[in-house]
Image 1: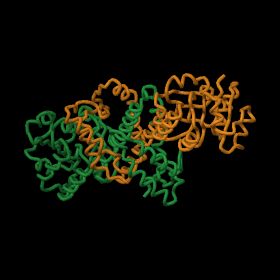
Image 2 (image 1 turned 180 degrees about the vertical axis):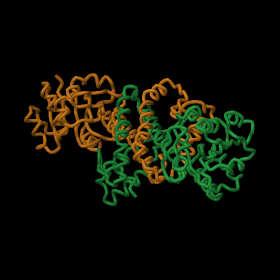
Image 3 (image 1 turned 90 degrees about the horizontal axis):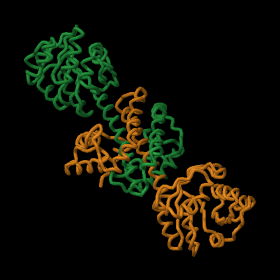
Length: 280
Length: 280
């Protein structure tokens, strides 16, 4: 059975290591502050005196430090990762993950990125949710160990794909939520009581929700039916919306959108639908 | 019974006039191209040779021309609107409606703005949906006639409030829909297949939908509980989102949002929730 290193034995590292130990895995634990490895060692892990010692005997290395910056520090202190798959069980931006991917590759290893979405308790009991990304063969090789943590989804070949997905989901929430705040604020400023308008505002979000699958399909097939309006009509509406939007939270960045719409209309694509905005 | 003028006898004007005629109202019709008043005259309306003649005998004036620019032209050609309530049954931006409100007041009349949301057929059969705004006493005075068109909602004292509401609802749709396109585009660019992520993306919109009523209530009561994150945490997330968002549709205008967040955090309000962004 594969020996697994757990570097960083805070809440998440201890939880992940415990799940592996319970399934009979051989686990080697290291923490910068040795005392903090105590819980995992008590549960059956071997203690390493350095990260390098733990990595040397392991084919799978789980790094559960504070964030990708701390992961970078751990990697910088290692000389050789030949033959090991490193899983970064910590948050960070896609560009931070991409930088750590370079560090791992320079040392001969392969990095899998991860989006940590659950509490330590959930991972310890095998009921966590985890996004993983990076080279598929490396994921497949260590899938059995990762599956011990719970519902694990592989989302793409790039190690930074899981972090991108996390950020994208936050981004959609912010775009919609900031839109809601702009809407409610603009109504209040115009002397319109928003309280009676909850169904009207909710209906707009329902329309977008219903468009998630069609929009994905349209981009995949590169066919952009006009839907409720075509690009010429969207251009008129968005231009007037942009001009009237004197809001404390800005205009939602409509400028680049209007410019892109104008380009598409000028290119003779005015009869297509809004999804064509993303067509290269 | 009040004599009602219908200025502009295209589809909407003819539909509105028909609904009033059927209820026994006295209707005077005028159109710039006289032939086009034929349908309404056949249905029982009297024909006026000028807009001024129609307005002179009417307490309620429905203007159903192409848009607020055309309404402005009609108003400029009139000298006196003393004692009349003008309803602008046509689309336009809030600032266009405000300009026409000044024109009506200069002539001694009162303008009600309207958001036209249904087909002519729906209004003709009394099943239309109409937003109306402007001085409440004037709305109440003519409510019985307007109710003949269908479900009529008064939304505020300013004549431009109905147009503002229309624009605000479009704005929320665009903010959320553009957020969806940015999300799907960013996933595709990162090599992540968005098709498997429909439930994840939809869930983000559901969270916002669930926040419509609470957000309205928080702004009304000016209490801003932190919710899923406080302003300090939002600032960190939004700053990193802004930095990583290299998208063809721009960053969603996060710049002013990040600046406003920083102001609130600097003012010691970092423990509050996102709705505080709109607190003056």
